[in-house]
Length: 619
Image (cartoon, rainbow, N blue to C red):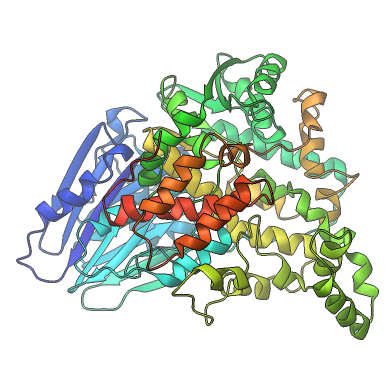
C-alpha cells in the first residue's frame, strides 16, 4: 500500500527530480515507511511505501525484464499467487515474492489486456523503455485513486490531486466541479476542483505514447444482469464467494483487524474473518451525545461474534479541532458527515493493526438503502394517465411546505432520472442560483447521471437506482472516504464486498430478492444466517450517525460562524446567504445541517488546499 507520483516528459534533458520529490512529499502519509525514485530520459517516478508484506515484496519503482519495464503500483492484487505460479510454469522468472512484480510479468505476457486478469484494488503505471510507452489503469470499482494533468509537454500523474497542485503552473478553479459538489456532496469523476487535474475513471486504462495524445479506454462496466434463480442456490453461491473473498483479502504479513459498527455489513465481514483468524481485533468509535454512538451495539455484536473490540468516544471539540487536518487529508472536498468519524476510526485502528477490513459496498451491490423501496411505494403512479399525472404535479407545486402528501405527489410525478441522483441530493438547482455568484445554468446535476440512466434503460427502477449509486455514490463518496481517511493514518483498508467475483454473484440477483419481505439486502441476510447471530441479521441500518444537527445549533455554532466569516470564498459563495442558513438552523426553524455541512466543508477545503491558509476555528 502506498502512494505514487511521476511524469512522462519529451525533452530528453529534463531533470525533474526536485519537482517529483516535492510532489512525493505531499503524500508521505500514504507511505511513511520508505520512498524511492527512478529517472531516465523520458520519465521520472516517485513512490511512498507502507510495508504490508515483508521487504521481499520489492521496493518501488520496481524494474522487470532487464529493466525494460518499470512500475509504480498502489493497491493489492488478491489473485497474484495463482498468477505467479502460472507464469512460472511458462518460464517467467521473478526476483521477489511481490504482487507488484507479478503485474509486470502479466503485462509482458498480455499487454493492455492485463486488466482483465487482475482481482483486487489497484492504480498503477508501467513504463516500457523499449517502446517508450506509458500504460496505466485504475481498478474496476475505483477503490484506489489516480489523478493526472498535462502541462508544457509533460504528462503528470499522482495518487492525490494535492501532489499535482504542488507543481502545476496553471491552475483554474472548476466552477463545474463546485456546482456538482453542491448537489452530490462530493466531486464526481473525472472532475476535480482544479480544471487542469482529472481523475481516471474506475474500470479504465490509458496509453500515453511519446508525442501522441492520451488514449483512455474502458475495460469494465459493473452491469447488472438479473437472473431468476432458486433462493437456496443463490444463498450458497453468495456465501461461498464471500468466504473466498474475505480469505483472500486477509493475505498479509502484518496484523489484520476489522471495523465493526454493529450493523449487518461489518458483522458479516467480521464473522467470516474470524474463521481465518481466531484472535481478530475489531475497532469502533462513537460520539458522546446520546443516540449517536454505536459503541454499545458494536460491543454487544463483538461478544456475539466472539471477537475483541476496541472503541473510543469522539467529542465535539475533538471533531472541530481535527477538521482542517481531515479536509487536507481528504484531498478533494467530501461533505459526508460519516467521513469524519471514520477518520478517527482509522487512527484508532492504526494503534492495533496496519490492515483493516470494512463493509463498504454491500448496500450498493445487494440493495441496502431504504430509498430502494421507493419504486414500490410509487408504483401506483405508473398506472396514472399522463394528463392526470401532469395535473397532480402542478397541484404538488402549489401545496404549502410540510403539508402531508406533498412530497409523495412530487416524487410520484417526477421521472426517476430527475428524482434520483444517489444517496445525497443536497442543494436543488433553484437553491444553488441563490448563493453561487458563478452559477452556470448550462451545468446540470443530471449531466453526471444521464450516461448511467442511458445504460440501464432495460432494467427495473430499483436496479437502476443501484446502478446510479454504483457509479457515483460508491466511487465518489464511500470509497474516496475509505481510501483518504485510512491513508491519513497510514492504514490499509480492504473492502471484501467490493470485489469483482462477489459482484458477479450480486449482479445476478433479481430486485425482488434484494428488496423483499419488508427488508433490504434480503438475500445477503439469508446467506449470512448460518454464521451471523440472528439479532444482527435483521437489525435496521443505522449508517454512521453524526450529531451535526445538534452541534451546529449548540457546541459548533460559533465554530461554523467563524468559518463562514473568515473563509476566502466570496467569489464562489454568498456568505450572507449561508449565515442566514446557519441562523435558520440554530433557531430550530428548519434542519439544514447537511446543506450547511456541505458549504462549511468546501470553505475549509478552499482555504486549506488552495490558499494554504488553515482557518483557525473558534473554541
